[in-house]
Image 1: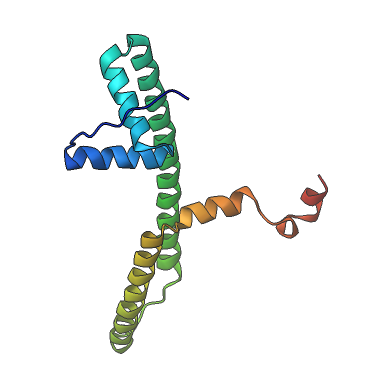
Image 2 (image 1 turned 90 degrees about the horizontal axis):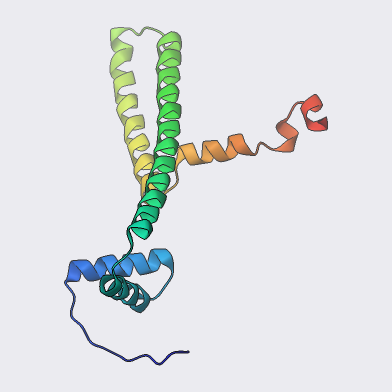
Length: 149
């Protein structure tokens, strides 16, 4: 292993946060990140290396956008179907029943918002659960002729 020499340097706090975050994402030490950055600065990256890195990043962004587009389509369809079913099956109410329904609706909406807040805070996402369920349905839920294939 090559000999390493310790050096104390000062960083802008925001830059150091970025270095720490990158080190966590890449699962390497902060020293490795700093050493690579200094080496890159001293040697200058070739245009081919920069183009390859940019191409990889653009490809990754493209895949992420495709996933977001799919998720958005599922969300749009879900909301549309919900509204269609709700409008189709919600019976008209008398004046007296509307007040009670409004109170119950506000109560349910509050519960909905609390559940949504919890799910967003914990990272649980309905679309992820839905895609997992669709990708791997239980064998017992398949039709008999599909299970034999």
